[in-house]
Length: 284
Image 1 (tube, helix red, strand yellow):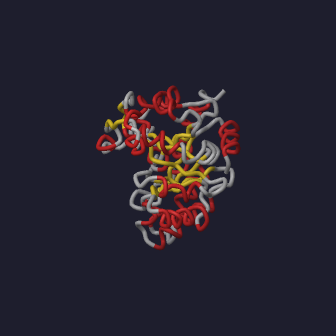
Image 2 (cartoon, rainbow, N blue to C red):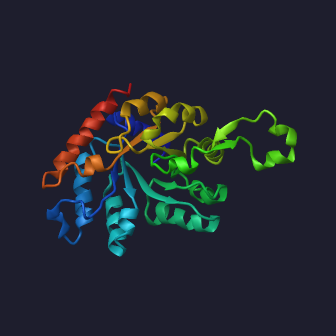
Image 3 (tube, one colour):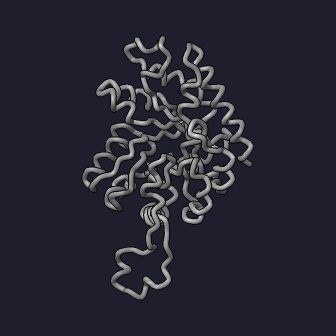
């Protein structure tokens, strides 16, 4: 799915909701757990219940990989069940040396034909480039996350210069100090375009969204953390939205585990519909 198609879906549905399929077999309704295809049957019901209210589904691959072969099969069946009208994300957080990343890209863009995959930028440009080489596919780079450990590295203050600047010492004069996550955004944004590159920004980091939009004004942001994690939809929209909306707000547990009984589908639909109603107010 290309950028214009994604924007059209957002405008048509008056929604920028992404439903996260972080499916833990230990948490799905008990009446499903004995089924041979329990995870897929649960996901199928969630997709049927929520597809009118969202534009995107995000599959957190860890929950499927932990199940071995059965998990991979459930992930594949789930992916193929997602309607073509909906953007699909493999939340895999991959990233390695170039030839290894090329295999990861093949996995999540060819073997499993997702529209997008999340990647970690720590290993630099050669670890991300293989993902960006695919046409009409998206690379979603971790920018500023919502977990407590984000403070360990992402907010560290670093001097705003590159290694090359040391070759010309006078360039260092006037350079300002910067936080590491800002340097990541500035650097990675040069490797791709707003047509194939997104960034993950946690909803609990909404106070930083103004700074982030100064750096990447046109890129889409994948925003987890609204709902169960305490992020504010209003703050994210107020500070993070651009002229194309530019946001995919992910909600996982609040939707898929809205009920524990046989009415879980209806409960998921109700929560997703409420998100959609709230989002529609921000779409002209």
